[in-house]
Image (cartoon, rainbow, N blue to C red; front, side):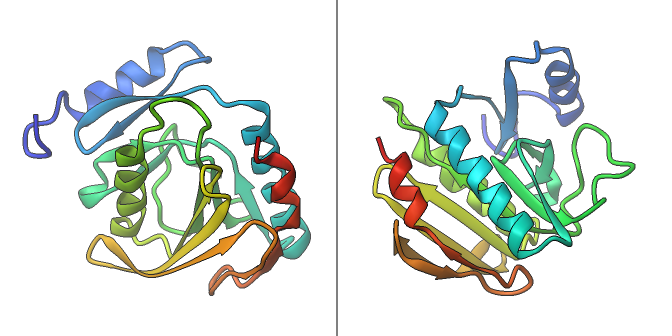
Length: 189
């Protein structure tokens, strides 16, 4: 199996994902079927905290948690980022897998589980860059850092800044917010 020879066609994956129980979230990354692992309470608390911060700092935008998003080269990947930031109303008319046009930022929060798949995190980040999403944020609970990736070009983000939990973190345009991340220290265990 390679990107040239995926495990299945995208249409077959979408049919499988549609038929999966609500408690199972499937992703299709680099031609491979992935199961998005369940989240713990701290993971969910981080996503809700980010959602509230975005709503407060940019009320014209919405952070959509866990929506289906097309990404990757030729938009062949199907992923469920922990959050995807777009203008309010962006999802109107979208089906189960949204086109990335108009999304300003994606967010991934690492899991505190044995076997946390870094390869998948890297592939998803690069997929967001390939799709042209301007900003990607990784909240890394293993290293207690928040990394901001920006300036996507040729499937990679050209710029990365990493900040310890507790730092004040500026997000580049088009997001254009500054987060005080002291609260993230509450969710490190």
